[in-house]
Image 1 (cartoon, rainbow, N blue to C red):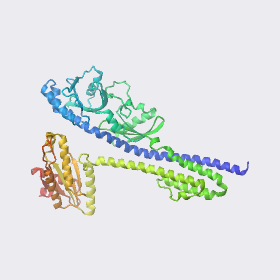
Image 2 (image 1 turned 90 degrees about the horizontal axis):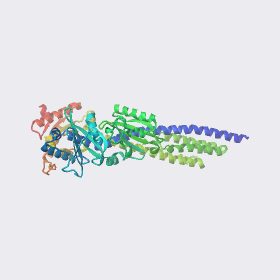
Image 3 (image 1 turned 45 degrees about the vertical axis):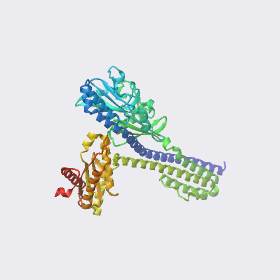
Image 4 (image 1 turned 135 degrees about the vertical axis):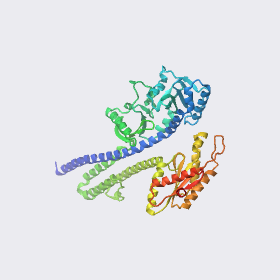
Length: 570
């Protein structure tokens, strides 16, 4: 064999060997990018799904707890045969029915076994007592099991054959001290809940919820849901995580991650698993409010297909083939120099930078076309990466807003205002500025809630928030500090401006006429306001304490008025 064919064969062997090295490098690079991105994406996705799930549930849980604590229901439980108490209790149940999201409720009494229920269509008006629970009836086992479990609150996905519905039930124990009087709660339509919460998402993302035993409680595929988990006897086969993960190692890894997530509720635990022969990243978080685990499965082949990176290897092999054909004539000019540029461009792309704008003008013939293909492919990969990072940034911002903004009034909440106060105090120290703080409290707010209901109470809080926003400057900050208390931060304030704004806020709330009771009659509100102008180098705790003292002085002086800290000190 002549030297030239031998040399070409040697070159081909070397090209093949180097191709293997490049293939391994590209694969490791792709794996690293996928894993680093996927873990961060999984954390944001899990927290986002957790927030979306809790939003519709927390309000229903709070209302269910209030219903279970109703004194009228407790009286009925103690005196089940009293007709007057029965009428009062049913009226109480009906008032809660209109506030529940599903417009339905249930109340089950432990002593009498009476089961009350009405739905959104008011189908059982006058017949709210649906049936009597029987411990021998398997369909009623859930009630007696929950009583034995003695857990204050339980969420269960279960059908009710007698009512003909399948719902996500919120069960809250009715207690009188240590005695359990019964169970009260509501249900959310399972199909609608799955459609609005679990089924919503992007391709390649699956969210599900499981209990401590790993039984599936919520899944877009309802055939995988373990209905009535609480009523299943020991030894009964449950629909658990084993249905999703074929490998025992994956099952053990997911359960270990669940335990780790429960130990660290603020963390999202991630683990790689196999589902249907495809690699997934499972992000797991413990939802302490409902004592479930939220699991988000990311199909990495869908979200970031590996073939996005294979073009780099193809470009290298193609360039080597061109080198074999033109080796003797244009080795340096047409092969080595363009390959050097390509190598530098690959390094820039690997670092997340755009390839050189002059890259398309390097080389000639096939090498130049291949480099152009690389440039287009690299631009596509970088664009996809930027879009993914943008989505992560948007979801991070949405989560940050959820933690700092009060959803009812759209003002800062206590956490958001605390951070803003600390930052503004630090800036005031640096710039030798003055800050003013007003602390507002709605007078007799409990009487509004008790006398007119929480809906009117919520409307009152919103009215106060609007009145505050109408009086403050664009660069001042207002927050709902908690309950019926509000805080206003004034930047670059003077004692005169602080006192004037405090008086205006009292007047603005007192003049508001929008608040109405259930019969449409106008209700008047008033607020007590305390103010304090921060001293140089004053601490945040001192600023809050001084404003709080001034607020209490305003209340002590008769409510509905403003009092400054200077007057309190004097």
